[in-house]
Amino acid sequence: GAKVGSYLAYATPAQSAGENPEAAASTLLVIKILSVKDTPTPLSKPEGDAVTNLPAGLPKVSVDSKNVPQIDVKGADKPKDVVAQDLIAGHGDKVKANDTIVANYVGVNLSDGTKFDSSYDKGQPATFSLQGVIPGWTKGLTGKTVGSRVLLVIPAAQAYGAQGQGQAKGDLVFVVDILGIK
Image 1 (tube, rainbow, N blue to C red):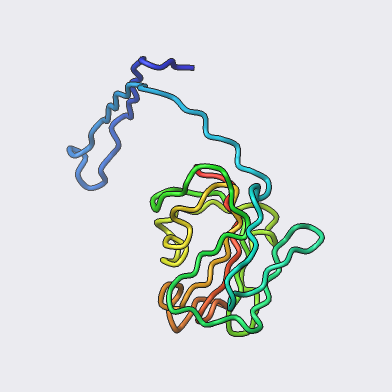
Image 2 (cartoon, rainbow, N blue to C red):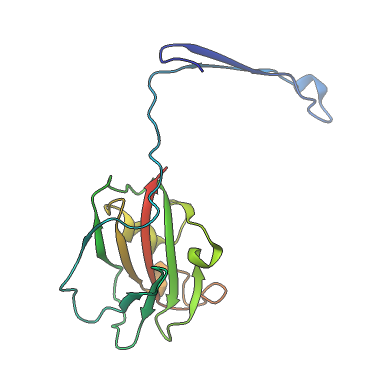
């Protein structure tokens, strides 16, 4: 209920410091509210313009009856660097490398198309800091816009390395729906 321009004081009592009780200290934090901005509600699905005339050599993406992306890797080229191809170009805010995004995604191995992860299977979008994901996600999604559906083809060196992680092995392919920025 505080208004812009008001000050808030937040205090915590001294906590015992274990073996050194004299080191216990109270904390006082004073906050001035400079501005407020509503965080937009994330989209429920990608919204934007379908991109046609995709470059050759990319995995093929279709959707099932529930609008869940299906990835076909047959004939797809091995990536030399991260490929980030819009399938739907959203009209929302641009994603920055230090943003936390709300996204739906599907991930498969490029070698054989084996799905190793999907937020759709979990029944809800995931929230990720682009500082806490594989480098290929940070590189590929930076500059993309909210509402976009992005195909990421990521070499192993910018994913989980040659050893992989769990079922994610080698070069990876993701379809990521950017639904919002937190």
